Image (cartoon, rainbow, N blue to C red; front, side, top):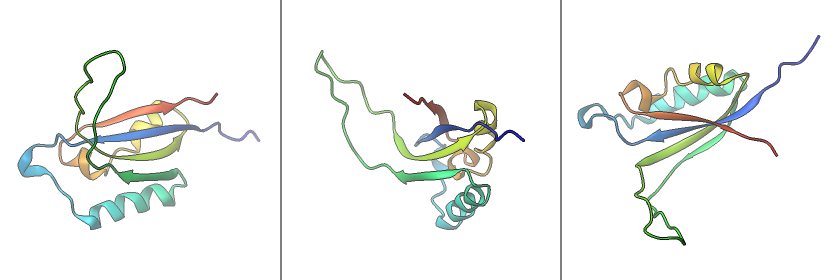
Length: 104
């Protein structure tokens, strides 16, 4: 029996849900994170505070409104996308960016 190969992904939550639909209910986050933990795919995460963008080569880009991240493991980008269901940002109409974390 061959073990499934899992890749690491980061889910970047953007703070762009429609104003009246933003939901910061801690209970919804606890339920969502509990689901990821129960599935054995949760690898960590955090809210993200204020900051700046900087560049040595010229004017810095504007911060895009990231509000948090979650690191998960999944078999593929498609499987990682399925893990977004139930995410309070996603469910409120906001953007969750999914990126694979490449291994050296």
